[in-house]
Image: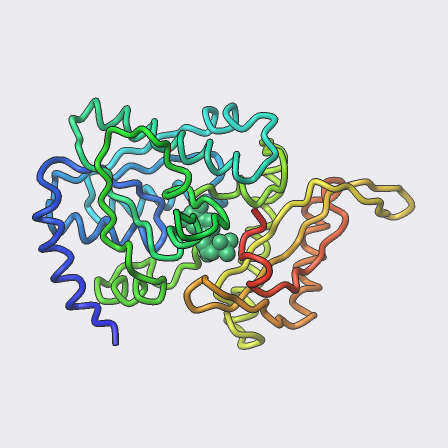
Length: 315
Ligand code: XMP
């Protein structure tokens, strides 16, 4: 049985030994990076600089809330708005692996700039086991390059520290609970963010659509779970398909994108089953999405694929 208290004690001692200078943590506000920041903060305190990058691919109001969290945790932090850089770098790019690599590289270059300014030697990342297992190596096939592993450029100046490398999500949540962090039950959100929930080319218009759709999916599913109508899935979100289909509004023809809803049950992200959520809930989500995003989306589908053969995210 995984013992969170013991892990915290041993990990803090190990970080104290390993991290002998200033360190930078890539802080997304998710369970992994928040737990990691709390551990490293215990070990080296003010020597840690938490950096949140607003890529432009975060969910609704997310970056504002992440900043509040960094303040609440009393972290020494920096907030970087890099959305323009990320959008420019992804212009015309459609291939998922290329997107992931570009995003991974951009993150690192931003961290390197800050590291140089602040004379930082170490880069702390909240990488967990499924991230590097699926990113592949000499023995494993590359399923997808997680932004913090396979997305890393080959030449890097910073020394990487990954305190959660051998853990799975359920174990990281146990540590978060033991540390009383307010993010312990948050659903996972990938580092490349909404950029991999827009299939094909990423544009501000498409991201805005999927951001709104993700928000509706989250709110409706959480409300239904709260009312006891369904179990809260492990992860639930929307994906924008760059396919246009014909619809009708009143007596007017519509031609808009397709939104796919994805909701899955899992324990460790290595496998998952699609959630059998009630049709009434799907109906509410579909109606809200097509009303809110009128003229942009006129069709909503539900993803009924398990992992394997699908993965959780579509890219
Ligand atoms: P997949 O799509 O590989 O997702 O079945 C498994 C879990 O990992 C999340 N995910 C990522 N997390 N960086 C992350 O930090 C990434 O590049 C990334 N890609 C996928 C995904 O949301 C799911 O929880």
